[in-house]
Length: 347
Image (cartoon, rainbow, N blue to C red; front, side, top):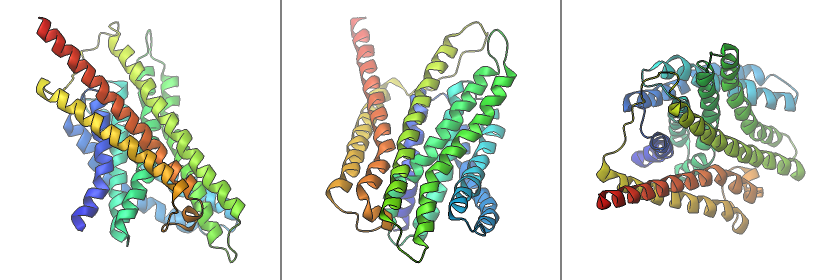
C-alpha cells in the first residue's frame, strides 16, 4: 500500500516533467532538472513554515469574505509562489545550462512539480481513501501548480529575452517581467483557492449554505481552472515560438545551444510513447469530465457531491489539453521519423 501511495503521488508530476523536457529537445541536463525537482520538494517545507503563522493571524479576521481573500492570496498563494520563485531565480536560472528563454519555463515547472509531489505525498499519507485523493489531486492540485509554474516561467523567459534585446538590452522591461513572474502565478493561485476557502467558510456556519452561493462558487472554480489552463498553454506555445526565433537570430553571436536528443533507434519508440500516453490521457480526461453528468459523486466534499458535473468538468480541462499536446507531439515525432527514414532510403 505504501508503494502504491508513493507511485500515485509521483506519477503525475514525473509524466509532465518528462513531457516538458522532451518538448524542448532535452536541452537541459538531468542534473539541473532533478536538482530543481528536489529543491521544489524541500521548498514545500519552507512554505508550510511561512503559512502556519500567517494562517493563525488570518483566522482572527471576522469578516468571511475578507478572511477568504486573505487566506487565498496572502496566506497560501503568495508564500507558496514566492518560495518557488526564489528557488527558480536564485538557483535554477544560474545553472550553466540556462541559455534559452524556454528553459525558464521548464525549470519553473520542475520546481513546481517537486513542490506538488511532496505535497501530494503528505495528503495521501493522511487520507483514509488514498486512491480517490490521488485521483482528485492529480486532476486539480497538480495541474494548478503546473499552470502557475508555466505563467512564472513565461515571464521569466520574456525577462531573459528583454535583458539582451537587440540592438540594446531593456532592463526596465526585464524588471517588469520579473515582477509579473511572481504576481501572475500568485493571483492565479489565489483565484484557484478562493472559491474553495469561501465554500469551507460557508460550511462552518450554523445553517446549510445557500444552493445559489455554492453554485456560483463552483462555477468560479471551474472558470479559474479553464481560463488558467488556456493561458498557460498559450504562454507555453508563445515562448516556444519566441525561443525558435531567438535561436535563429545569429546577430547576437551566442554559441549554439546544446541539444541532448535521443539516439535514432529510440525516437520512434518515444513517438509511440507520447501517442499512447497522450491518447489515454485525453480519453481518460474526457471520461472523467463527462462522468459528473451521468453519475453522482458519492464521496468527497459536500459541494462536489451536489454539483458533480461542474467539479468533474473543471478538473478534466488541463489534463485533456495536455493529453492533446502530448498526442500532437508524438504525432509530429512520428512524421519526422518517417520523413527521416524515407530520406535515408532514397540516399
